[in-house]
Length: 185
DNA sequence: TCGCAGATTGCCT
DNA sequence: GGCAATCTGCGAA
Image (cartoon, rainbow, N blue to C red; front, side, top):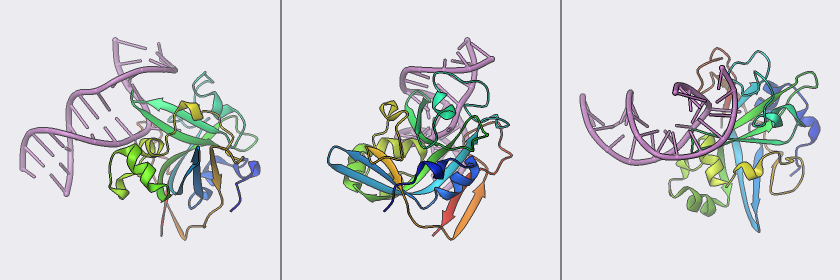
């Protein structure tokens, strides 16, 4: 169980998005530990990606995407939902991040059930806003270092057998890019 | 089972 | 002022 290093995130956003599949996300709340395997991601670069928050200019909201790789980027949307991203990019890229769309619950399932107010395991963390609810991720977790053993980090996992690339979900521009990644067990 | 509209706040144009 | 990297419930078939 090794925490992913800074170097892991210092690569092309799309490569990192694929490599994050099968890794384990760890959330610590006090003494409680919640973990889950990442099963779906989406890549958002800056330049040439109209769907990305950082495709235009740097603002107060998206500044994390321009900063240090391996940090968390959390944003609020639709008036009621948070989404969790990991900043990842090559040195040449000025911005980029990977959206964590879904995880598979491993530990702390009872906590997730309480947070989500549902006992359907399949419905706990199978969406970007669902997993932030289950793991209690809000803008308080904005710009957290995911390469350190703190309240939120990502550790090594298994390498998936088959990666599936699909169009990204929930956006109106840039839908020609197959930057949504999931895998078969 | 499927599809659509409402919720609800902060951000950008 | 309008819309957003979404989720849920409800109504129709």
